[in-house]
Length: 187
Image 1: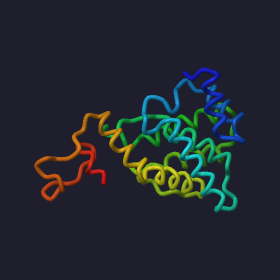
Image 2 (image 1 turned 180 degrees about the horizontal axis):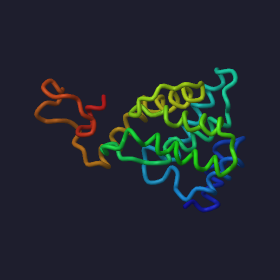
Image 3 (image 1 turned 135 degrees about the vertical axis):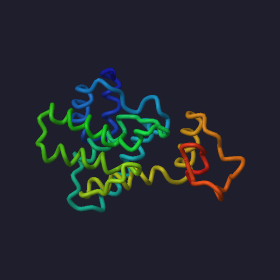
């Protein structure tokens, strides 16, 4: 469970939606952006900044839906090498649904948040049906690119104890690529 000061600090990142997010975080007994350096507070900050930039080009994007969806998009952590990995976004969406229902949100808006969370995940393979879902998906995927994306891959591989590559077949000429076994197979 997050302390009141942790809730306040995290919610402040999502101005002008701090009060809404602080209220939702206070209802939740989990932690956000802790214990996983690839989905930490910095990841949330980068994704939210990208969400805001992309949403500025999408007239009518619901920033409140996007703020809640961004905050909770990775709230359930499933290790990359787990057979349940593709379920992580659905599990995170269930957390958000429960919190929003407790807070009295309309079902339509609750489902908009849940769908954006479900559809953001590459491994879930869910097509976005709304601009908010597409915005969150694109922002999260952009954060996986470049130097930070590469660093995140190696961070996760190190945490899981994965070798960098298959010494017998480093270019995967005689085996399928498998980034659950070898870090470089991600690329």
